[in-house]
Length: 346
Image (cartoon, rainbow, N blue to C red; front, side, top):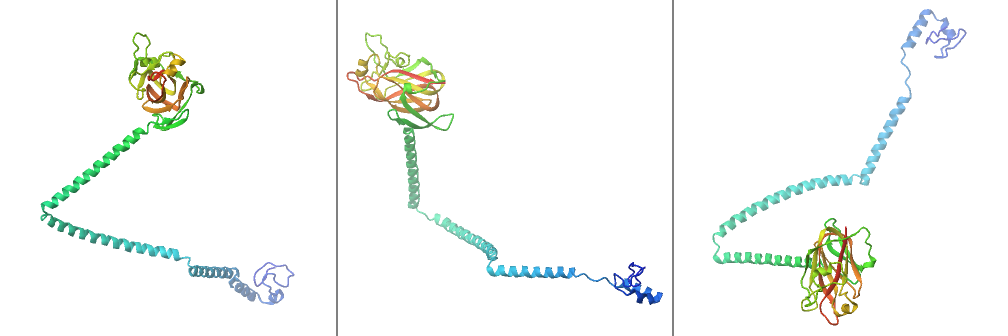
């Protein structure tokens, strides 16, 4: 059967409605018209409101109250001071810029007034004023000339800096650089036996390009003391300079058969025809090597040994020039001698 009040389906022997709690026996005694009215009124009653909506509204109100309290506390603690100060600074900058622009305009107007007054005064200048102006210009020209001379001095210092003295068998860094790489070249004076020649070739010479500042001419002798004798591959022959004095500043040079990447230069210094002649003649002590447009200076011991000048990296060159800077004096003769020069590269 059905509940006459709410219409819920019930058991036939039920005394109360499980849904609305109505007493079925009393309802059964009502007339069918009353039962229909009760069912219609029950259907028209609004559903009961749930308590969940009230809780949501209450929670939102609590959150809003907490947020307002936090903002107020932050304001009291000065959290917004930096923002407010930055906005004030921006306003101040704008006012300052406008004030500066106004000051500039005032200065510009005052400058124009001064120029007009100067233009009026120019007509009243005398000859003496013109002479003073010309003198000032002359003094300025003199200053510029002095500066030019200072530049020349600095250039001279730079050219002198290209020569770097290598101590006896010590390493030096030369301020010049190779054309291939922008790295300073170091030259080290060694005994020739201490150098590795692996992968290197002995440079060929062009005899006709050999030259020297001077040489000794021995009358009645076939001994050749010219510059070529220092490059001919014969250790017995040697170049012997022929000027008066110890041979300081004398030089020899020669061109290669091609361009080489020079890595090592070996020298046999003095007269090596015999030990006796070695002692009697001057032997170069300090030499300047000009290779590939660069200069390297080295000092060698007074020994009948073959020495070497080894470069930290190859120097591209097609000729060589050697100048005598200092000598070990001989016991009899003042002629500086170089027996042999060899160049190695690839």
